[in-house]
Length: 341
Image (cartoon, rainbow, N blue to C red; front, side, top):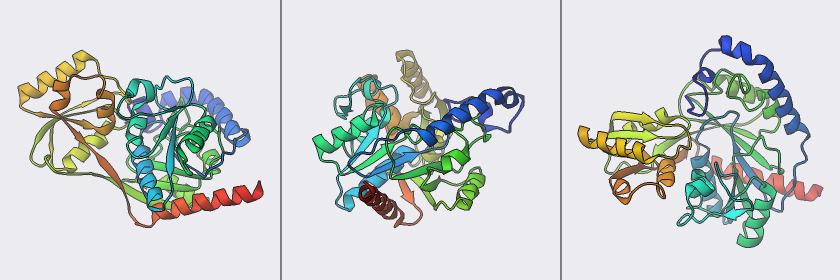
């Protein structure tokens, strides 16, 4: 389940969903109206948005990194736009991955900044201008922001987790959807099914009936070196911690103990002390995600960081040509936008 979300969002609808249905109806009405009628500022570069239909992690950040890597292969100069979860900058800020702390810019922007310039700001248009003018970016990848309707999106790739799908299919607060699927599909250019599982099949079929292309991808450990046969206390503060624990096993490690934390969790000293003490007592190594490591970089002792293993993951598209196709279609849509003025 997504740790930001109540467990019942990912279960069959029950009395709680029924009780919240009036609020969900109001939320859906407002969200749909905003998406349909908002004034979207057009910026002077192609904009590829990596979004999701729901609250909770679907693996957008590794997808954004994979597409930035492909953009570079195509001789483009990509830049990332991010709101930055928990970010504290009033003005658009270019992330410094070596000196900025996750508390100030967010954990995902720190990971993205290892691959291309990242502008962190709620004002996406201002961030886009900064990337274009100060860094010469000619291709913008927006990490999330699909529903915000702040800037014109040339291509919206919506990521759906095959294992969790869209939960109970209800809109906030009765479920995890940020707006009704029918309202979101209007602005969806393509749908990316991540991983294996049947939970996303219904929304995949709905997108296909709406004429949207369906792509598939999965995540894999970037390296299995050093993990095989090792026993771990695995901990993670991400949208779906169970996915990370499975990835550790896929890399050959044994998850002897697991500790899930809320998404984007900042670890207190006593929590790190408990993790360290438990791992030592049980003779286990400590392992976590790259996102958690980004948050720990400025919040944990060097001793803790030295004993910590970090499992990096890559997005692998089922068809090798898909990233190039998505970027080409983004560029085509941008050219058409420019011609229309």
